[in-house]
Image (tube, rainbow, N blue to C red; front, side, top):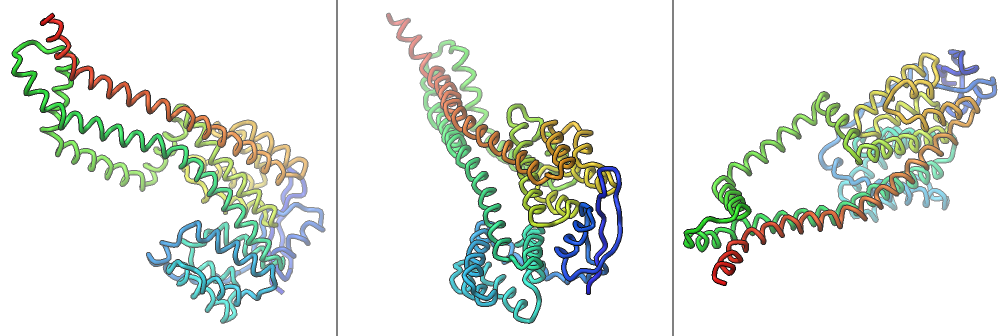
Amino acid sequence: MPTYTYKAKKDPQHTIEGTLEASSENEAIEKINQLGLIPVHVQLQDAPSLPRIATSTLYARVRPREITVFSRQLSSLLRSGVPILRALNIILEQSESKSLQEVLRNIYAAVKEGITFSQALTRYPKVFPALFIALIRTGEDSGALADALLRIADYRRKQEEMFARFRMAMAYPLLMGVVGCGTVVFMLTFVMPRLMKMYLSMEQALPLPTRVLISVSQALRVNWLWIMVFIAVAIALIRQQSRTKAGKLSLSIFKINIPLFGKFILKAELARFCRTLELLMKSGIPILKAIDISIPVLDNEIIKRQLAQSYKELEQGGSFGKSLKSTAIFPLFMANLISVGEESGKLNDALGEVANSYERDTDETIQVMSSLLEPLMILGMGLIVGFIVMAMLLPIFEINMMVK
């Protein structure tokens, strides 16, 4: 029988380490609970690592939405009593994605040779993240693989819906911005040069707005190539810098300090973390392992670093809630709820409450943003276009006034 090493809490101040024999990780956790301890970290002793197959660009083209659909379909088939090999083959045959077909074909072959489903998934880390594999492994150990797949599908669907709402809220303002910028460029580079010939033939002093507009128009027409090169180089440098550790950290700090948008980004990230951690812990995964899996789900580097520090303090026997309180980035609401959850033994409920609260806040912020950005974009573009039209027509109005 396999041997598991574990670290568990006897109470908030005392941590116990040891080993025990169990047929699965879930059974090991159950034995630790029977001892009156709270499991923090459980790991198979001397567990052999499965070599990973290099993920090709073909596998990288598998879209996240396809994995969500795959999870739900496989869950439905397993719930209907279809064996996993037959279920994988059914999904493989009906899938329209060549990339997903290739992945499922290799997974089918691996499972057929006797490798567990979760082990086969580890060969494609860019397609199936650590969160997905951990929940599948827990479902296999507990004999509830269909339920684990359904939880994964529901979790991914909620995350996708939140991002979809944000994209929908930003779509109209972005379209307005692109159309407005195109209109301004057209007026400055095509309309204004034709009016300039007429203005210059008048041989009279032009109003200040008109002179400013003529200067901008000339600068655009003469230096448009250099402007395009500058923009392209700036974008390339920003993208290159954002791939470095220092660049990622600087960008993350900048994001959460943007006026108005900073709090939205912070709450969205924390809601995702709490929801992920809640899902993992409800599936029976120890808190240390659950936190370790949840951190890479986030995008913001400064939040990930602070959570990694909290992970180290928890590993050394500290309190997760107290470690969050010691940093300025995490709201007291989140830290206090998690502390109460730890003390009462209902950490899952506390994480769910934090996630629900921040998800509601982000939804309300998205609605406010979509309601305010549209009229603000229209007003802003209207003012710019109005200034251009006024500057172009002002000399004509002055001539009419002189004639009268």
